[in-house]
Length: 107
Image (cartoon, rainbow, N blue to C red; front, side, top):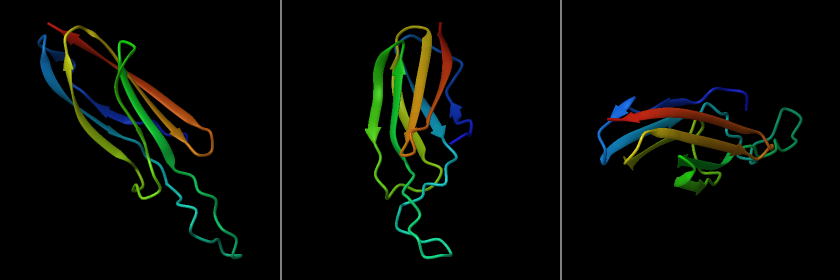
């Protein structure tokens, strides 16, 4: 998994405002149920965990199962009381981890 995630959050918010957060991670998401041309099972390789924190505090964390589509998309809300940084993490079966962060300023 060597791709950059797409993250959309507002750059600015008012104190106490509920904002929308959208993330999209490009990933093939191999279920482990298909076979290659020689008949061997292609190993499962999915993004199996996603988490988001704000200034070190958890916002959302989930375990993902094989039924998820390729290129997982998450949309969720968070209330912001202070300026800070959202940290996002995606982990895959093959051990790869992608992290990204986005800042927001509360006025």
